[in-house]
Length: 225
Length: 225
DNA sequence: CTATGTGAAACGGTTCACAGCA
DNA sequence: TGCTGTGAACCGTTTCACATAG
Image (tube, rainbow over the protein chains, first blue to last red):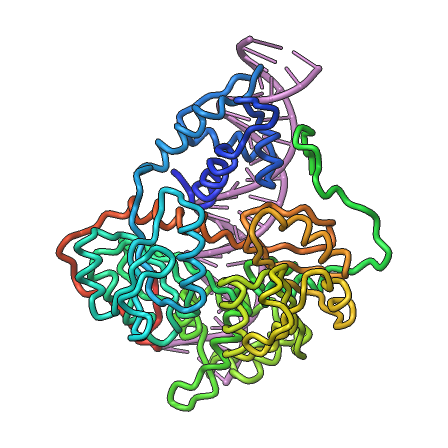
């Protein structure tokens, strides 16, 4: 019923709607939201069909109500604790980001094998030794973890995460993780993504003298790609 | 003809094949590669149809030849320079990663507005002031850039990147970037991905007492999901 | 008129199932 | 027998096009 793609876009819409205040308006049209999100207006309307809310053809969607209905669908708007394993540069980037931009997600516990990083507070987040992983996770009821270790220990760590009750993992490791069917894993393989970008950068022709392009197309114009 | 998904998986396959040495064998079956990559054997065979190479039903695919043919399809195996804009934690994570695991991609120039970070060498990569962006990029013929700045300056920076001849951008910013049609942008929105994981973590049921699951299924067994 | 809601068509990607071959 | 290569079926997603409403 709710596919991965739809969920992803609804989360994007919600973030954009929360920042919406063009001319102090509290209403928004599908083509405006579409332009901000970089999708088609039809896509926006189709996605909004999934939430229990109907806009008015005259005035568009009420921003506040739409945010509420999306949140109702996504569920659990109350703050949810996230664990982080691996306090390298990437791990610290994650801590810094979610500390700076407080959302309903917050990284509340970090873990590393490196004794030097342990038992300190980094970016407002306490760093524990990896040995205490299960203990802390169970105590805090953590269900979601970000995995930012090197590739080698990844499978072993994820097994311990699952054992401790984690059912969602954001995996920055190049390892393909084996988990039981009730656990959701999202892979983010940055090296693969960069190679992909390099490939498509090559395949795109590079016109030497080029025209100006619409850098910031007016948000109010219906985009018809 | 070659879709984004296929390119992505071919890059994954190539990496796995380069690390393949089970029992010193130089051949591999589709189900073995599939198991490593976490896809179906049919998917592997279908993807390999895209490259100009045929395996043998008796012995499977010759690993070295398959790597060569995938590389021929992906093109430009010679080292390609990458620029990085934004030397925060995330930027340093990228520099550290591509320094440690040398591939055919290397981050050769980094940029930041912060004077304190500039004109030093971090992770084997020289850091320039943002003002010299165009100069350095044109001089080195850089076509690919990773964007790891805050959201606010992202659109302005990408405009300058495009002006300097960049045709591929890996965008870690939550901003939707407007670029001319000949420029490829890949978005990696970590906050959205974490929220998505949190959502699916909630929707998965969490069976309390659970059975052991196949953590490392034998690579030689045909997986039929 | 313009914008929404939506059935239906179009599209793209994955899987099936089987022919062919060592 | 067990694998590869592949046409065809299948399935999920996106887009179209139009009925409907202010």
